[in-house]
Image (tube, rainbow, N blue to C red; front, side, top):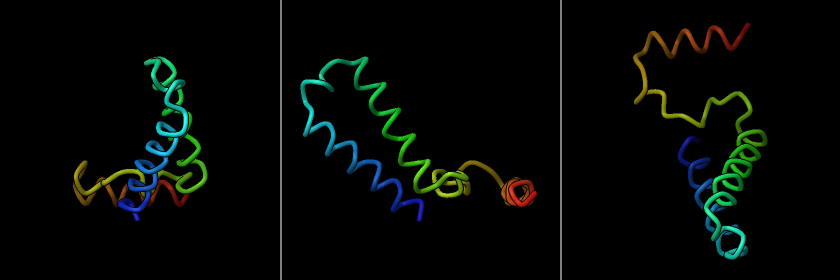
Length: 73
């Protein structure tokens, strides 16, 4: 699932940058636009942030279990 969400983020970025090249030519617009686009993808597909990270790269098994226990409360 994390790979699917990552692929969706990349594809959405390409679609928007190709559709609105003048808007995204400005560095400030690009940063704000990509942040907002990623926020929408996160809110729609992964509001609990379970799939937006590759946790096995970030931490050990104990930290992953702790995060899961906290999210259940």
